Amino acid sequence: MSPPPAHIPGQLAIPATAPAADSPGDAPSPAPLPTGAQILADLRAQIKRYVVMPSEEALTAVTLWVAATHLQPAWQHAPRLAVVGPAKRCGKSRLLDVVTETVHNHLITVNASPAAIFRSITDEDPPTLLVDEADTLFGTAKAAEKNEDLRGLLNAGHQRNRPTLRVSGPEHKPQAFPTFAMAALAGIGDLPDTIMDRSVVIRMRRRRPGETVAAFRTGRDTPALHAIRARLAAWLRPLYAQAMDMEPALPVEDRAADTWEPLVIIADLAGGEWPALARTACSTMTDYEAGQDEEGGLRTRILVDIRRAFAAEAEPAVLRTSRLLEYLNADKEAPWAEYGANGLTPRGLQLLLKDYGISSANRRFPDGTQAKGFARNQFLDAWARYCPEPGTRAEPAQTVAETLPGTGA
Image 1 (cartoon, rainbow, N blue to C red):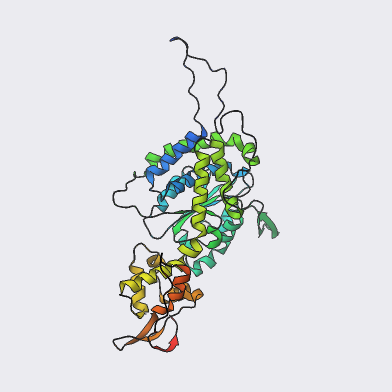
Image 2 (image 1 turned 90 degrees about the vertical axis):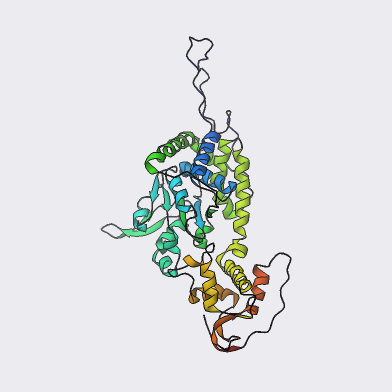
């Protein structure tokens, strides 16, 4: 890391010749300009005014990410901000509203073609890309295939010097377009793994009764946000060379370090409490996300929710597929009702369980009827391996209800 400047980190220099107000007739001394730490604190307060954040660490991360957009030319990596939640009305769009008015040179990508975005990004001063309702772009296989170019842009643009080639012009010659730009995406459910892996992930949740925030009105409230945006730019732009040379100590490695480095550099430039806050947020949030594939991803979430469904039905040996889907789609705190156009379907359930070797089959039920369903003991091994309940051991295999010929969801 470069040696610290002579003045307080993040403090704009005050002329040493400022006049002192030694007598009533003298002009008062000019008030000291706010430090970087104060500007970040003011930004944090504005975010907290309009949005209930899931944690103090998440609030710190968003604050630093917004500030980092104002020094994009200094970074080697452009971290994504993934604002996700399990359902509607979790505050995702409201947070994106505040981010939009405080980042550097925002570029809304809703309804924009990848070609238009390519032509909007420059090497010298890239915009900040913002995507709301990202689940409509990547939430289904068909949508993801249609928007593969956009996903490729978001993946490539995480690292500097990863241009995309397109044939353009009357002579149809290949042309390299820069992709490097910071981006924020908001949507229901997790984004594609390749984007999540390059993101500072903010997992929003619905407000509890009694949790209140101020209403956001564009005409009334954006001037204060724009004022903070101007203060961020005035503070950070002169620190470009210093920021580019800094190599901060980080509590993470590899891609997580690439993603969090700009945020930690901003905190170190600001000084005060921010260096400690940034590293705590980095460690806490990356540790949580590192466990998502095992504990919190959709494929593990479905196992946990299926276990709850069996418990709600008094632990039957077999459970109809239709009844299981009815239970899953009725859970307002789970992502299944929004998993597709009609919620989680038999086909969607089959795909989620495929990696565990679990599928439905024709089964005979105690009342003598036959229908597609699952046996409880099909899940015992997966429950024990991927989502064991605290203090429990794997259950012994139980007798499976009769399975009739034919399988599939």
